[in-house]
Image (cartoon, rainbow, N blue to C red; front, side):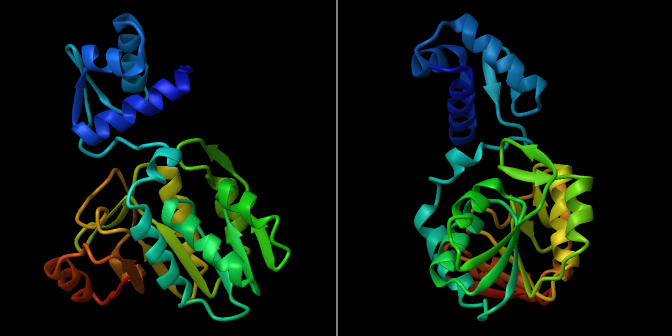
Length: 252
């Protein structure tokens, strides 16, 4: 198993279980305990998990799974959210799309319709849309993040300042009424804000597992968001907390 694949499996296991020891990971990966210890130390040094004596645990806010693993979680809910979000997009609209598993599902729905302009900083979304001549595609440049397939940073922010969107759809890693929208990376958060500044209507796409969570970097307060599209897993108390601060909530 390649080193990158081992890292993905380790992060997925620790995220799902909350912790893991070297012996369990060694059996899971089919490698020696020494190899596991080296992998855990590298992931710890990168801030992606917390190394412990004999294993590792997930940190409170810093563990970010690679996109290819996240794409399989809550997949049906994300597809329903994407279909509901697509109903908000009128013919001929200019749409901003950040990276993320749910925004990727939305891009696929919109590609089937065509007749719109999509501006995105996600290279995986761009790769899917570039073969769709019925969709006008603008790709934002910047520093590449391997965890999310997004291009972020000052170059991305400067380019986004040149555009205006009818709607911007952003993915988040956490959302609460008090802390607003959060994500794992501060540069990604800054580029997300650039999408929101250029949009007439700002929409968060978040499955219900993201709501009630807070992660490392603040994107924006909920006052900057017009709509949240989520799934039926959202509790009534959570919905009330969001609507009380003026956000429209749509369950898919």
